[in-house]
Length: 339
Image (cartoon, rainbow, N blue to C red; front, side, top):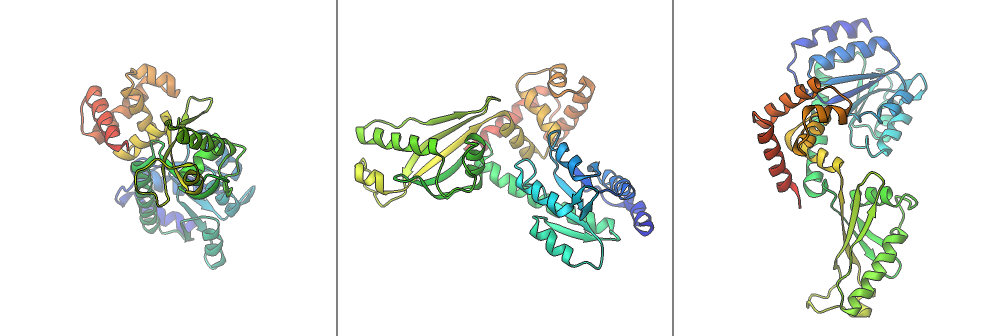
């Protein structure tokens, strides 16, 4: 560990690659946490040291990470087990995981990849190499998130259902996630769609047979988020444009388009569009809604001065000088991203 600390001490000479991204260091080694924390802060990241799996799981409720550095063994269990749990949770599933492993144990690389990790580095850790790997994985995660958000971060997702038995012929990962959240008793990897969706689909087909326009299905949650499902089109061979008859409606698969409306979806889209931290995106979101710094501070449990500092950084990233200009640019960008 002495060699590692001596190497890390020169990390302040490296180029700052971070932009305030939240990086968890999950390790029971306090010395390692301190050294990596200093390295990450010098490189422009926001480091959070967590000494156990329990601490990491508890931290999710406060703020999810952008990337996780994780020991293979923790004081309360295996790091590989924690990795699998993080990958199974929606808030942390997209955050790249990099294991910190001991040299001479190649089986750790296999276990790391099997548990969902993006990479594995061995001791003694070379700071410049670690920062380069982190930057690469963060950029990849950001590009994947932006591509996904450009299409459906505002809640759009699709699935194809066979009407007579509700069999899922195809669905996007987002549609699976949304059904799991809005239909909690429905297994996430079931071969058939949720019962409420199947019942609605049958009602839609009856409406079509009567010559009526099918109504959308709206599912709601206690926090005000809403999921709207609309029958889009048949995926069969009927290209004539004629109204499908009863037999055709029952025989062909149907494409269903889903859209979620929630504050979190808009905040995430702002974050990706302008490369903001989570807190900066939250501040900008409430500024767009016309809230004052004091209002935003009360909402986020912060202070007006802290909100002001976040807003100053938002101005720089958006290339504006006033709240009005920031709100206008954010609103215009959101409109462009909406499908």
